[in-house]
Structure formats: C-alpha cells, structure tokens
Length: 132
Image (cartoon, one colour):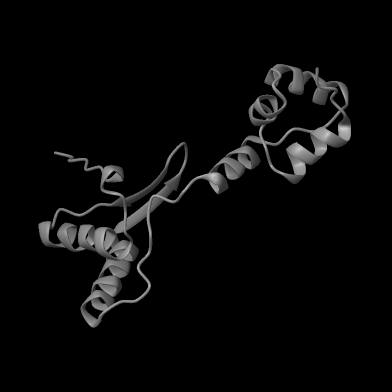
C-alpha cells in the first residue's frame, strides 16, 4: 500500500509535471485517490491551459524542420513563408491547425511542397477541405 504525502504529490505533479492519471499509474493507485488527496490537502490543480501545455510538451512533433537548405530549397522556403503570410492562418482551439486558403492550384502545390520538403510535415496530418 502506498502512503501518499504532500511532498510526494508536489514532486510528481509540480516538479516532474505528471498528470494525476500518470501519478496513479506510477504509484499503482486510482487517479481518483490522487485527486481526492490533492483536494483534501488544498493542492491547486492545473488550469486546462496549463494541462494542455504539459501534454503538448511531452508529444513528439509531427514535423521536422530541415536546417541545411540548397538554393532551390531556400527559395521554396521563402515562397512558402510568403504564401502562408498572405493566405494562411492558424487556430489553437481543440486542435492546432495551419490553414491555407487559395483557389490557385499552383499556389496550393507550392505550399504543399513547402510543408512536405522544408517543414517535414507527416503526410498523415495533411487534410484538404474543398468549399464550393
């Protein structure tokens, strides 16, 4: 049987950044026990924003930026950044999304080439929406 202490929970939750579920798994107890203990000891929980940030920090990025670029790749990077600046957008709601809205097929091809070749975006992460 694990004896919970305020110092142990503070170390795991605040210092190591574990979630209550991760603490429960580590200590082989229910995360509800951890939550009740924190409530009883008046230990503040993370806000949703803080919890999402912690979760995001642990995830492996779905891209890998290319550092050494040839002259052609440098031009593609500049074109991609300019297209994003002019026609792109992002949202940080439930999902982090990069949008590119344009009906010119050549611009879309250049932007996709930029995402694939310069940003190293995982192909499975790409989505297309067509508005008619």
